[in-house]
Length: 288
Image (cartoon, rainbow, N blue to C red; front, side, top):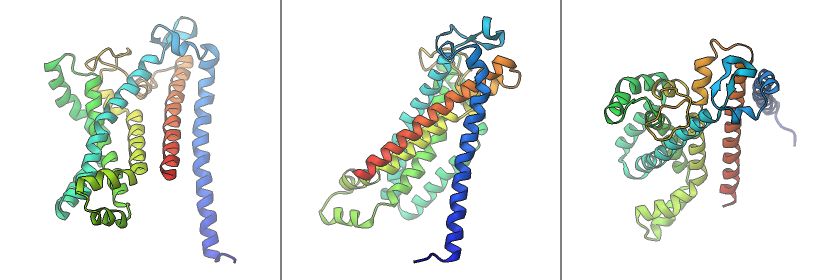
């Protein structure tokens, strides 16, 4: 049976857009790789993990190119934010879906959507003038890993909450009616029916939130102090991979500039790991 001409045109248009999207991603990766080749050739990949520090402006022979402190800072701040935002976001989604009255639930959702729309530089400015002074009174210097974790928590919380709530709303109503017919309490229905049924969507929400936390630049640049060191505590200033690129790309030259593209490749590798984890969790969720 042949497809209508309009449907066939739409299918080919969607296929073309999908190919274009994939091609753009491949072009970005290829551009990063080509720009990173000079540093990888002159410095070598091993030195990006074994050098004593990060001083790439001194050149390939006398400079230092260690990215480990910035990788540690990126992963630590993202992990801390996700660990806090995930339970808060899931709790917000459960409240909005199962506990809040209709009008209150809609108002609460609009508030969370408003949080999602605030620019990151506004979060960073608020953290710089309000949050870091409060932390400084507790433990100097204030601009620290803790400030970055708290700012990123607020920034990724709407992603977890909104996507988790959408996943909970997509649960077939028959599942919930069946649990009610069995005499299960509201919490027993949530724990035994709703959360397992929405597990795949919640995992996706967490992965996307982690991706935003890893890729955030302005907010963490403004509140984390940007000292290249492996954090020994949550009060230490640290620098992330994204902040490193933003701070140094404006004046970087030659091998220093190429080393910053290696930093970009490192970020791409982290994103690839997150996408692969999301795909695997999605397959496991469908099998379950």
